[in-house]
Length: 128
Image 1 (cartoon, one colour):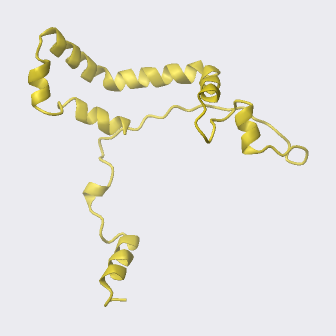
Image 2 (cartoon, rainbow, N blue to C red):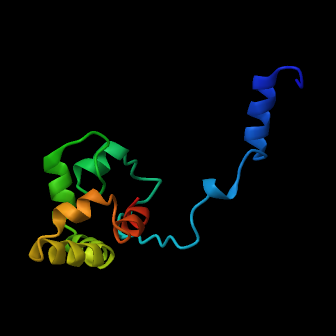
Image 3 (cartoon, helix red, strand yellow):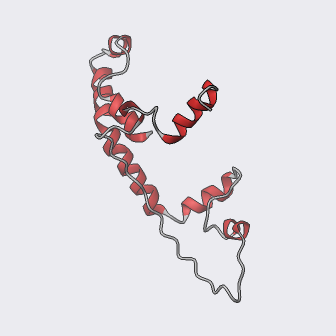
């Protein structure tokens, strides 16, 4: 195995020997999750519910893109949608306010020439 460099490299990668600190999440990254609680009860002895049946009842998102089912799913959960919007605006609020200020003072072209603003990078890390 030591003679085959590709195999040795694969084994080092699987054991985690080739990892460095840049390949892990930054300590300053805060993940924010929106939890959607679903009340779905059944007795295993009497009912067998397939994943497709759950999707058809609107209790889960579909496996294949279907705008009507997705709209019905989120239509039943306005609090989850509002929570997501508030979380997004709390993260992106600083960037959006700086962008609005640049638009008002007509510094947009100057700001775009400098590359990503220091306010945009943490937002992208949080939302990714």
